[in-house]
Image (cartoon, rainbow, N blue to C red; front, side):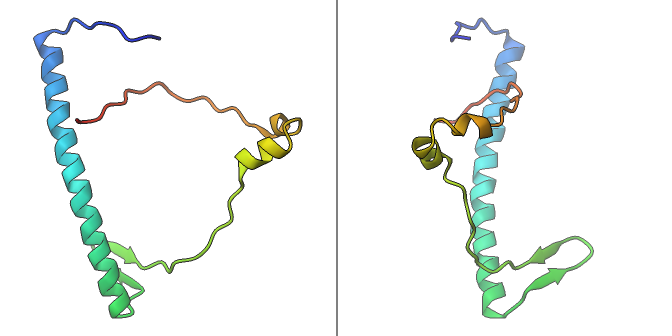
Length: 101
């Protein structure tokens, strides 16, 4: 599908305008959330708190660790004839992507 010139009704424009406003608020809240989570992590580390729970929330501190990952790009380069045998194709639902400028 290519890009198409859209002719929008006033109702369509209202939806887009509201979505733009909500997205801006969401991004601000998300940034605030990350700052608060970082501050909470520092508090939990300072007081050696591993878990906090009440009727409304459960917070668990998870120590840093290492993880193994599979480098599929390198595998594909090193074994181009074998790689296709291990590729799994998964359907992806259509969606709308947008970002604020």
